[in-house]
Structures are given as structure tokens and as C-alpha cells.
Length: 142
Image (cartoon, rainbow, N blue to C red; front, side):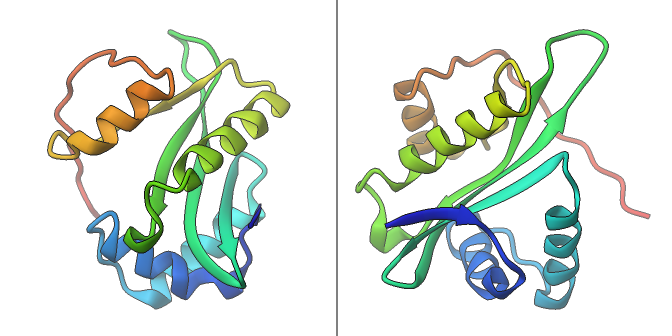
């Protein structure tokens, strides 16, 4: 079992995890473009978990800096293939992300999790994360 930095070749597996594990459908071509940007940006990172040559999970982190709090890394995605859940993969990815964040000088991690993802909430609490507040997520596309 290996956790490593993602490569462009991982995009099909990442896109599948986005769709199946996170319910975020997105065109593969556009996902490829986003991954290329993430991999070129020092403020972003995407790690994958590989078992026997197959990507079974990933964690994506991005710098979160504001004028009203500590420097953090934002977990933008943590996904594990359903067939590989409850094997410590999510925990391993999260710990790997935490270590990378520390190495970058961040003081912690933050993340958002959909209200309906109650199992994920239990997981994060078990890993020492505390619920800070409830929010409504807004977006405007151009």
C-alpha cells in the first residue's frame, strides 16, 4: 500500500472516486485540466492511495489563508473507494495530509462536509476534528 503524489495518469481513478464516493460528476477533460493546475501549484497538493497498482482513495489539500485566523490547509476532497472502506485508508490519507500541511508551515487542517454525510462526520470526529459551525455554501458560476 502506497500513498504518493498524484500524477496526470491518475485522473480517471480520481474522477471515478469523485463521482462514486463524493457524488460530484464532472467532465473528465475538465477534471484533467484541474488536476494539471493542482499539480503545478505549490499551494495545492493531491495524494493518492494505491493498492496493487490501483488508486483506491485520495486527499486534496489547498492553502487556506485569511486575516482572521491561523494558516491552515483546506481539505477539498477525501474519497475512498467503497470496496476499500473500513481498512484505514481514509485515516492514512488524512494523517498523510496532516503531515504535509505541517511540513508546509500550516497550523492545522480545516474541511467542510455535507450535512447528509453523517458517517464522514463520525470519522472526522474520531480523528480529532471538531465541528466549528454550520454553514450554507453559496456559489455563482460565470
